[in-house]
Image (tube, rainbow, N blue to C red):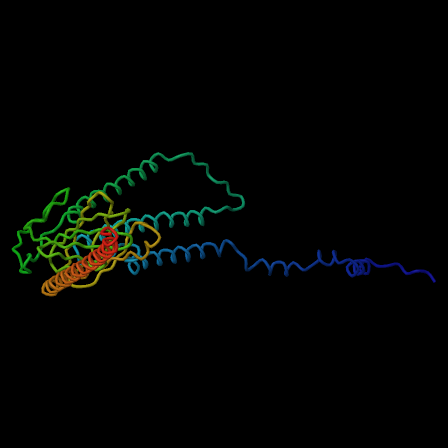
Length: 346
């Protein structure tokens, strides 16, 4: 029986069934088109870039207001603390504006001028106007920040006039702030001068006056009176800092640094040594209690009485100990002499 010749259609069908590669290569074009359709860089990238830019801008703007006291010092009830805080916030606001402008331009340029088929990037070797512009702009910003800082510096560094005197009574105000580079006493002579001694790992405060008054950790001061601080250290370098009451100041052995504050409302303000001073540095706390003058005076007198009582008790105990040691020494010497006397007589 003679073989029947194969037609062209049957040959194609057999090849398709027996060869997987042929089947793969002959997939319908519509299937390939459906897989590529959802992935379009032209439509997706601009949308993502705009969303990212809006998210970054919104987060930065919200952070500037909601978290201002997290990245800047606390503004407490003192003039110098408020001035320091305002300087930090001014610099923060300017930095945010510059950051948003630079990052926004970067994102815009990345999206708009991204690589595309058939496009050749322009070769730019410099732009004199642009380079001069951003150099002059940066210089102007620095000059502005410097000028504002020096304008605020007097109110930060120099003590203000006290609102009350040493007797707690209001004092007359002349409206003139005292200015000095070495922080002399504020005008009127009504400041409360406290010596601050840093010791591993505690703060000691020595108060002025005829009575011997000192305290540890807690500093008690009256509302409205300028407090000047003579800060030093007995051992290693420390740093005194109560954030809500003003800037920090180093406590260095052999040197006396000065700081000041004037609290305008009662409260308790906490701080910590801001200079690594040893293994227990983390527990070297400081606290300032601002109270009305009557409460301060009562605390001062009570503290003076407690210290005097403790000193009297210490003196009594030392006297008893000395007498006891003397008695024991005398008894020991008498026994030895008595034992040796008969031998000498014989």
